[in-house]
Length: 160
Image (cartoon, rainbow, N blue to C red; front, side, top):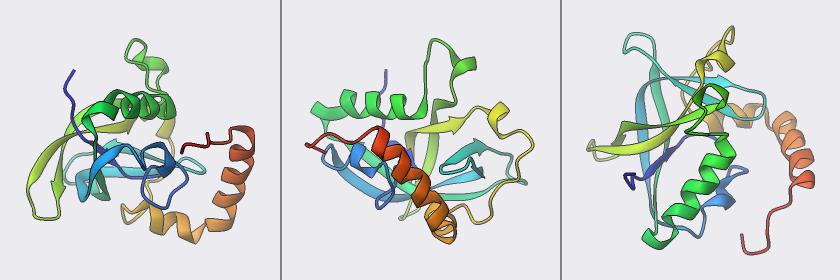
């Protein structure tokens, strides 16, 4: 398997609830974007679907490059968080997929991204803007309440 960096766009972004999953495990973090995406509100987290150029928008995020000796740990944490099972894609909520992302210097880079299983977004309307933190900030009290109840069930380990 290729050891690509990860493009993150939602709760794994800095300042979001799942950033602790990678905070001390990456060697580089860069501003990046994914062209032609549709971002959906799944309640308290987003789901990204790839779209045609005439339908999608630019999705803002970060490109995370794990430390070489921490790569498998990051991969495992992200796969678990996203419910990705390469042996049962139909049951997976998200699929780890290789895509090209654009860095702030306009260079393209291959990366893993977790794209949503389209069946979970059926009937939903994409959110405008392609920037989850801005969208989430407008719904902060609702989302923070959900995360607080979730974190009480699954507290993070002390080393994170």
